[in-house]
Length: 42
Image (cartoon, rainbow, N blue to C red):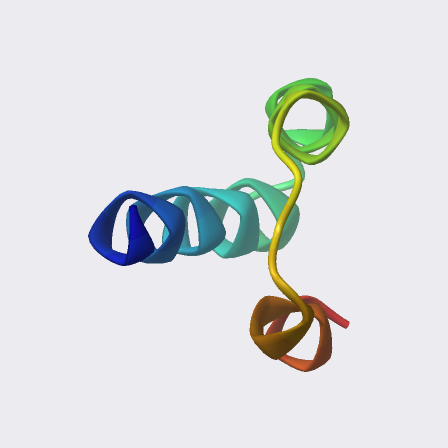
């Protein structure tokens, strides 16, 4: 699960930096990230 979360976190960061907010919101709304990921995503 941790590996899966790290991949989703990376996809969210890429989506943000490329301006792909539709994918970003989809990832954020459909996955409950652990507290460890919250700081990395902010």
